[in-house]
Length: 174
Image 1 (tube, rainbow, N blue to C red):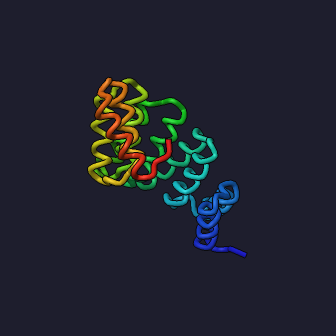
Image 2: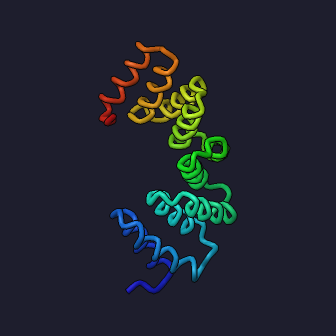
Image 3: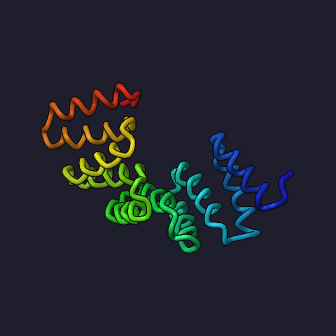
């Protein structure tokens, strides 16, 4: 039976990786009760809550993590994803921008920002952000697909078709 914060954290991560998010949260809560100043534990709990669709609770966890360590690009990115899940696109973009400021090579933040801009109807900006994600990882089918959506909305059909073809070649399912 796990009894140290490290053991509880490891057990929580194992549950998380196996898709057992509720069990992971229980383990993370045990760590937080003992040592509430571990940003990574708050972020892990936030990830699990986010995947359960509990965006407000996830944001609260990410905010706790950011209070402890405001220099974690991943936490800012995940907060942006949760805000997007709540339809708060402008706030999400601010989080993605902070994530990118910390780590300009954070492809997930670029994709999240591109998606948020696309949902706001700012397709030129969305395409630029998807291009940055593709620059970081040319094999990211999701980024190619997002770029294709933006191009399609701008009636740049042949470019959109090329982006969709690339996404499909990379195994992205749509």
